[in-house]
Length: 170
Image (cartoon, rainbow, N blue to C red; front, side):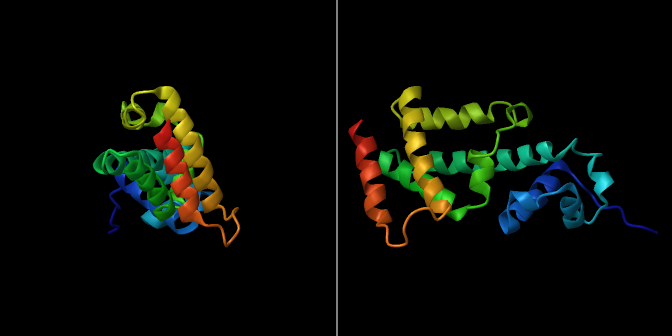
């Protein structure tokens, strides 16, 4: 008698996230995901339509985690900026899926993106424009840091202190 594996969207999302955390998003295929779940690839299509839907599951997890952490840290720009950087550096393979990959808005839980965006706008004093400017600075510097594009002897502490000072002065 064969034992049928219990597969849910949650288990698919967790397995996909594990693949991304271990090897990056390029390693995420329906075949690799099915193997991780202990099922055959065609069985995945009983639960998700395609890889984009799987990516959306990971994005939802990442946005939720980021939003919860962002809300939990203190209210100062320093605390918010430090959290952003630390979250990105702790999640170097998840960060690009959440913040660089095309966001599958139509597949995310309703209100998730708006809720996280609201936290960011609130941290920027209620200004969507300031929030975009802040995010561009943080995103750009994190991207350079994650991709090893800065010299090995770059003083990252001083660089981040300058970003914080610039943002606090706006």
